[in-house]
Amino acid sequence: MFNNEWCQYSSTQVHEDGHNLGLYHAGEGNDEYGDETGFMGYSYASFETKMCYNNAKSWQLGWYGLKHETLDFSQRGGFSGALVGVDDYQNAAAAGKYVVVKIVGGAAGDLFVGFNRRKGINAQTQEGMDLVTIQRQVGTGTSSLQAKLSAGGQFNVANFQNNKSLIIKVLNINLS
Image 1: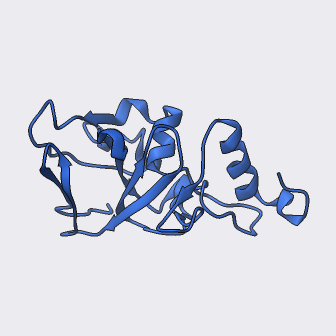
Image 2: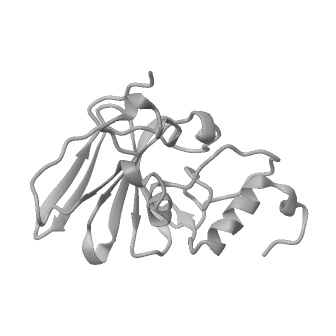
């Protein structure tokens, strides 16, 4: 609930609408609102904020469904794929590429991987601009930003499943 000057800011409106859609906050570390890659983190004193929800929240809402991939490594081997930002969802050059990849993680929560392209409808994202971002979320609860990866970056999760580690590696980033 809000009842002061924050009522007039679009990011506050979209954040609160997110709660009405069943979304919880997006945190980072010990900060419940700390994930500023999307609207379920902090709100901004701006009349226009071009930003989207983070990977976990977009998945939860079923958005960009034609460019989702679910990976359950207890059922399969490795994976290699290309990501595009949300603004390129309908771009013909995005054929065969993904907006969000969900990695099934079990009780510790699923991981959601996406390219936080700072462009178009996401031009004012506040964190992890033009980087691959990874959020963890258990069920439909609060998500937590885990990593922001540039080209060559790597995110490791020891003992991810059955004492096996998970490695997410960004080979390159092409902004064109």
